Length: 590
Image (spheres, rainbow, N blue to C red):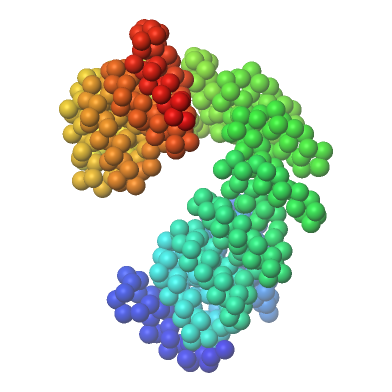
């Protein structure tokens, strides 16, 4: 620990180096008491808060006054209610009353300021420590580190950590390391966080704990780097750090996303072996994974098992199961789940009803979906943007463009503002309802006013233009993508190949296959089938067969549509079919 004077010098020099960052923090106490002392503070009323204020005012009048620990208890009580601005207001009052504060008081205030996304004022607490002759502890620096990450100031957070490390301002704890690892992961710097874990594990005085490892593993799984997450699991186990239910749950979710069910089963067995019972979050991951795979009956069994183990399903559990039934078009079964959850005392939320609305819309029961949508306010709930998006999708699918427009206006009136997903739904709805000109106008408006269109937006319009017979405009729009900072994805290329084949532009379609390979997009079975189908339609059997051979070498199979058009061609031409002879030759060569 370095001397207070040295800390003060460090603080006065400014937290951040030179002009590298935009932040210049002022370490002074006036930020907290720049208003004149008044008993009529800015505190908002509530019964709990009123009770705390009555107690506080009684304590202030007492002689001798109670110790600061009792005032801290009041502040801490307000923190637990989540009323952070009220904590700061009461702190101003406490200080202006001449009550001596301690490190714990200042820690409570710094934490409240961080939750209010006022990290700059949080740093003013550091100067306050020094002004009052108090030595800042590691808890304060942990709080400030979290605050910087919460506000997306990653470079500032790294700089602060490095400063603490180099100047030995305080003894770093495993919580400090956790704040850094978790912050880096949430900011999308998972590889840096993982390297940091290894570095501190080998050389650092403070060692990463299970929470730090779990944060990194969770982030790797979210980044679809499940194999790396499993390697990290093995390393932490070698170090004698035992994974907990959070670690396993993250890995199970990552494996479920890739349908690696044998490994999921092994992880669950390992949890049982080490006596780590799954919690409701673990069960929810399994239920959701099974439902997405279409195994709804197996998901039901998981829920039965969790109830037997004494773990109550929550609204997330039931929502996942309802969504599973809705995906399969079994709305009655989804409604039965809704009935069961209510009977078990689990309150449905807006997501529950949004799932049902989506299910109704996709099952061509739009009127029932609309009826449910209309009664949502009477249930004490407010439709979210997702709810509106489901309804818009349903209305466009039913060809009710005017009703979709009315709903869109109602959504904006209710202060649910459309996002890019909403606009992409509208673009798709216009195109599918032969309103391609309106869709193109909307796209141009988005380019100017936002939200900025993404590759989905452009691919939707390109598809609509081809279907509307405007192939030249579609090709021009596709060719403009690089100038807009966008790279075509697999769906974009499939759309182009299909459209070019429809227009008889077969050479251009074949060139598109070469272009996607050149741009690092590896063609899949869908791409080959689309091109082969287009060639077959135009009786380009030689080129189609060459692609069939290539597709076979890559381990892809012709789909139903490709098989049907091949069979039709053979039947039409009879025993002398060129295609039949070519296929027989391929078979003989094999």
